[in-house]
Length: 73
Ligand SMILES: [Zn+2]
Ligand SMILES: [Zn+2]
Image 1 (tube, rainbow, N blue to C red):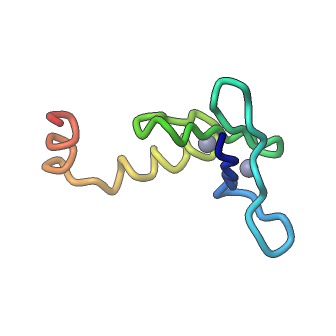
Image 2: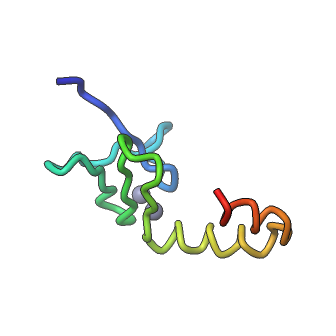
C-alpha cells in the first residue's frame, strides 16, 4: 500500500500546506476547512465552501464557447 499525502490547497500549516486526513473510502478531508479530495477519481468534485466559491467565480469568467465545450465532453 502506498502512503499518499494530500495537502489542502486552502490551508497553510507553518510553511507548507496542511496535510489532509485520509479516510477509509479513499477520500482525504481537511479537518480545518472541510475540503475533500479523492486522488484516484479525477472527476471528483469537492463541494466545500471554498471550492463552491472558486467554481462560481470561474463560471463568471468562462466564455460561452468554453462552457459548451465542457458540457459536450
Ligand atoms: Zn483546508
Ligand atoms: Zn473543497
